[in-house]
Length: 348
Image 1 (cartoon, rainbow, N blue to C red):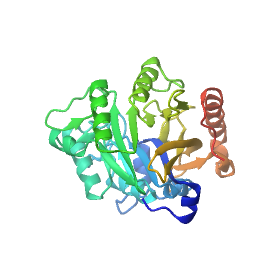
Image 2 (cartoon, helix red, strand yellow):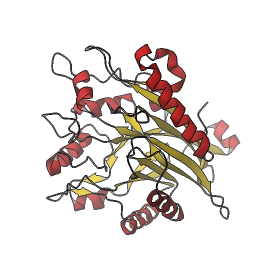
Image 3 (cartoon, rainbow, N blue to C red):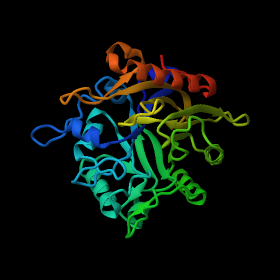
Image 4 (cartoon, helix red, strand yellow):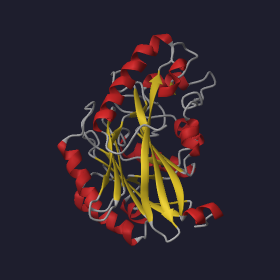
């Protein structure tokens, strides 16, 4: 890693990471993005938060809709247009998690096609694999972030009762397997280990015991970042400091929805967590701090309109008919974070 003069004087280099939750494509979203020529345009959706994504040294999103090909479909069995993945990449995401309860919605063929398309556009991913040989070759996925080697591991609690019929592999939550993967990452000389989990109970604002127990297990395994999704609502975040070693680990129980058509008061938006990692001139990597930013998903009003993510500080851009939903989401999410977050404040 090359250090600038200022970084040498400070003795450390800082890298910035950004994580968001569930990127979904319900039927109304697909229809809103479709243009008269049959193509799909997602450019309005992320315009107000694009800088947050692009400015990060590394940004990750949970792709909770397979790219299963036509006919495209929303809930309960998703298949999103390829253009959705293209635009996530274009807006600045560097990595997608693919292990979630919808990854087998179009069965083995849809999972395989998703991987093949992501590979075609050179979008790194983890959590699902073409076969066991591919998993052995690719897991753990080590990404180089300005000289810092971060291992990314992704797991899901389940796949809605759908099981693989052939050779494709889904990484399910399994402590023995996870411990082996973490050890493998350490053997690969990863500076940082990030575990992305699809877990918990939908629409529950606080983590359940199975989540807190698994988080404890992963922290004890030496994991630096635990990033959660699936509940479709935000859940608390904490930076935990080991009293003996001083090691800091980030636990994010749920980032909520990134973009969706869900209607619940608590599922109309989500959070992004911004993480700063310190890399010293002596080769030591550590979690410096983390903060969050809330955003609301405004649905289209007319046929020519589209979905758009509106940050908390941009309330003036919310349409009058969406003001009540915006305020309700922001109020409830802020209340959860103010009451339960530990060492993870709102971003300034």
